[in-house]
Length: 416
Image (cartoon, helix red, strand yellow):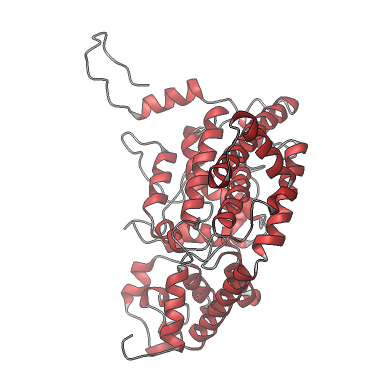
């Protein structure tokens, strides 16, 4: 890190890019991704005086519109049900914290890991997986809808923050994570990532700790909302064994104190197991370089067979008792109906959408003659079909805004 003088009272020199390069060379594992080895950005930019490539990616993500909107998007439960359960934003922050802990322990690139974690759910539409299902059905004749690929389009094209290029102009490695997580490598927008090889370990870490966060915190939220009880969880081996561990080191806990302690134990258990199993796999596969990571035949990050089995049992319970709870099903059914109705109405009457979205429609000139020249020159985005433009507009909405827009269109009043 920055060189200092021999005077112990001297102010340390500010960190420079040279210091970051030296830190990476000395600290990172040989199989970690160094920003100096990045494949760079789609649109050329000069280096920042003291922030590395992945630090800038992370900060661009945090400051973008889509990141802020995640605070109003459903994780499992509609975001307005109360003020305490997780939203897409709080879930992403929790994934980021867990991923950064794992990255630090394994000497991976923490900034890259954090950037991928913060962005991993940025493409989710309103109303959770029900919203994704609704948009996929609406767009089935136009390539369907995948939240990972929408996330890529969001950061590549739809964000409008910089005068010199569309989107956020993120690094290849952060953008690649959207594609590798989607599994849709055959999609046209994924062409540039088809030959890059297996996912980076940093991206694999985010994928796996995502499951730690949602399994554990969905259980916690469901308990807090009364969807399930501690008594019911006595049928779940993972919960029971985590509870036994808590009783050993902190006996006589009950109620909410016990619940909170078991949730912490579940998180700790999974993270420690992930670290141990990942180190075992790296040794077994003799992974000693980034090239070894890219050429790996299977995942290098994961859980032991025991924890995989325990997690599977917890996930079966969550599917049966939480994700299929009647209140959740009612909320998701309503969310699907709202998005399907809005989609049909915007396709029928595209002029109901804001002008900034109409700019992206190849047929916008059919509304009232050719659009102003500024529409095409200022936009800098590829033109799309009307259905894709409508789908992108809906996917960017929060739960609250989608409901408000539904009321405006189908329950009109002179106040709107």
